[in-house]
Amino acid sequence: MHRSSQLPRPRAGGGGELDGAAEGTPLAAERGVFQVHVPARALSPFVDLVGVERVEAVAREAEVVRAAIGPHTVWNVNSTAAGGGVSEILRSLLRYARGLGVEVGWLVVEGPPEFFAITKRLHNALHDNAGDGSRLGPREAALYERVLAQNFADIERLVRPGDAVVCHDPQTAGLVPHLRRLGEHVVWRCHIGHEGPGIEADAGWAFLRKYLEEVPIAVFTRSAYVPSWLSCARAVTIPPNIDPFSVKNQWMSEPSTRAILVTAGLVEGGGDACCSVYVREDGATEEVTHAAEIVREGGPPAWTTPLVVQVSRWDRMKDHVGLLAGFARLLEQGPDFGAELVLAGPAQRGVADDPEGPEVLGEVTRAWRALPEGVRRRVHLAELPMVDVDENAAIVNALQRHAAVVVQKSLREGFGLTVTEAMWKRRPIVASAVGGIQDQLRDGVEGLLVRDPTDPGETADAIRRVLASPPLAARLADAAYERVRERYLSLSALQRWGALAQLLYVGAPPDRRSA
Ligand code: UDP
Image (cartoon, rainbow, N blue to C red; front, side, top):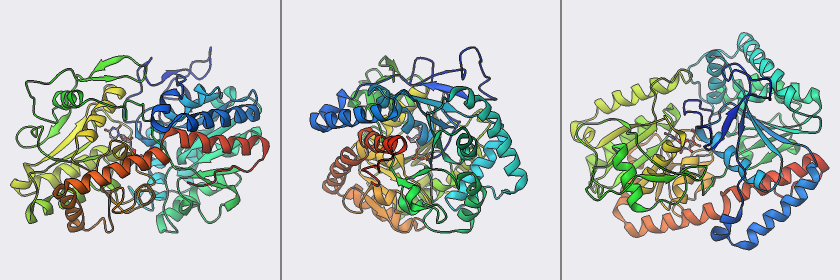
């Protein structure tokens, strides 16, 4: 998971509506906290996916949680309303929580680029990665604290005594001591992590520790990510989830999938393409109208060309360059089944506050140019349009659905949402055996894991195994879908957060402490 303010904010009336932090006190979104309104959504559509018993069980548990929370609100604070894994998860969790009658709120902190440079550095550090190698010293701590103190001044006006506040990731960890002083129920949710010690991870934790030492409960994606100085009694494990009814994951007919990809320039146009339609977060039917910006030689692949697809932010830890090397190996050693590679990520034009994105895209483009011509012609580097968050999600949905193989070639990964998204679409997956991905799928059961992500040969072999065997691909894909249905839908997360809310308000131990 990662913060990303590079995706557009949602349109008003779309997945979330933005406004000032409090009526009568509008706050400039660039300088202070703003609120995201997520419309309530009922759980009833889940009945078709998981059965009525499970949905009723969640509704009964929600009654108990509502009684425990009473008139209070559970606030979530993060640093982006759209884009990246954290906002995806929050949107789905909050809309169903509201549908169950639980009072929830979502606040987004803002800050100058220097603040986000520090938090990006911290994000990398908690993955035990040096990132841009910048300092994490007293000067950075002072700036970090100053920005969060400014944000806290807005938050303080909204949060009432007895409310609970869940702060997400390093961007908001510095709010914890302020909130503790107010006496609220405070939780810190960490979406990233690294197993065990590491020089960079230790430096990241050394920076954050003073803000988190007193946090009553910290939530991690895996128990292996809990830092040694945090008492186990205060650490809870909750894996992230996906919303099967979001634009990103909603069912899509094959004609729509094809039309969307044709419009986006990701597959060759056919005369039979119907409308490129999808259903917006607010229920309205919409068409994809924008094309991706694509670096390639020649035209788009044919509809029948098997596509190897990775969808990721332009981040070095997603190892696009390593995947180019693995794909080159597949083609060099053959058979390659005529496959082409699509590396897709958010458009970078006009992005001011993700210093690494355009730089990484530049590196990937240079690595692509250096490939032998025969390989280069079969690779497409796609910047997906960012003008509309729902449209971007619809294109990701179509691309994942159409992929012959979905790859997640990460060198580090707290939990790969793109992996779960592709599993839900019954796609065969090849992913690095790193971080949370190792919990998400079992090698040979729900996908293929690449043990050494730095070995292009191992990646090439795994992709070839899937392309070579439709029965293997189908078996992995079916098992992947079932695993998500059982473990990684919004329902599971609602139950875990419900148990946590009870722990906060009535002190009862949560009945689901781990995945
Ligand atoms: N994503 C997107 N548009 C893009 C690229 C990525 O919506 O152009 C989404 C992707 O579908 C996933 C999220 O961003 O939902 C990335 O989450 P993940 O956990 O895979 O990685 P992170 O970005 O959090 O490191």
